[in-house]
Image (cartoon, rainbow, N blue to C red; front, side, top):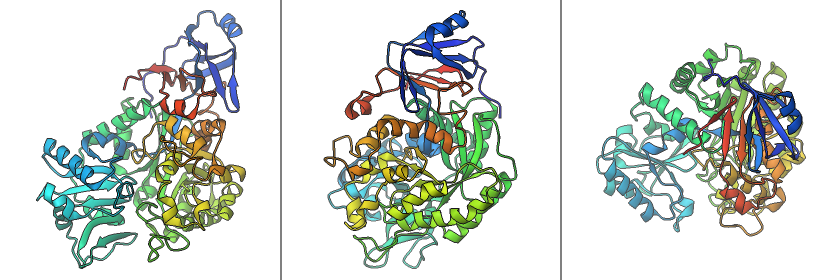
Length: 534
């Protein structure tokens, strides 16, 4: 794919900041950039003497590190947030309804769409109902996704459009929750959401491009120079290719196709690009189960707070196994969504069988890996499976995770230290727009396992905390290695692409509280400094 405009031919010498390497800081050194690559890292005066015409960029202290890589995001969803009502962080149903009412009044046309509600934050800890929405929306259809994207709250008008009634069966991999009388309550889980979502108006080609561009610019403003976009469908893929052909992608995109068998077969016939560029298809995103918050994560034993269920198989493991094998044989990378301990075991089992068929593919990934038995956590490293985790899920979910799992299984939750101890490669992301993409909040979460308010005291299962060095590596070199690009990305070394981030702070010495408040200072993508104004 064509790249954005070529960087200026002038050599640039960046100095004055501590340089972040894989194991810590390098002081008194500079980084030399030639076009889109790092030419050298070394003593500043020696580099300046060898290249006297280099344009000097002198930092007033701070830290220079590789451009961060967002290891798991949904770019289109992030870009669409401005067109939806944002219900994130609201702490009661009445507050949520007021937000919906205000937004609806200001945006009176078409479907009412939104996301971010979380019943676990409300005093009742109960799902909302279609009836709660009906008084606000009337005949206007509404669909509001839960914060994790694995459940939707819809009104009666939307249920009617979708033809969902008392006799509608649960689709495979989903549930239609019903009230005591047997009527749909207005809550749809996992694949059941598609019964309504398929009736939404399709975005135009221009709207898709605008959403993707908006999502990428939001990530750029956080200090990211590359993203793994998890679950790209056919129309989004076409939009990405148009943006790439026009040279208007602001950061690098590694696209994981949605698990659409026909789309897979069509795209995986092509060879995976050997050279890093601004856009490429990297692999396929598979779903085994749902989310813990909506009790859709598949567990080995019933939920402690709802013994009638063990969660859902969003996709049957045998179907995932067959298409994972196809993906590996084609030289592409499978990324398997698995949250519950049963789903993680199934993912590891099928990857162990499929690994023999891999043909030069990057290492397979398990996305989220939230609830994992000690036995299975050790298998990640042994099998060479990437643990692609999102630290903010731990600090967002810590208050209700014990209720879902019960005391006997609580030690399985977010086992990052166990992954690292077993030799697994850790790759960090945010799952945006499910969570805030701010990487500095994620870094603080990884080392404290506490939310910004300091809860829980001492950290949630503090024995699973990571160090600052480990956490930053997971956002840089770890993600690069997970993409099979450890020579090109996530590192400040000769020959790597010139994707760099400077922050105006001594990164190694900041407290977690100060780290959460840190913002990107200056950013280079492909050798070109970009504007970080948000």
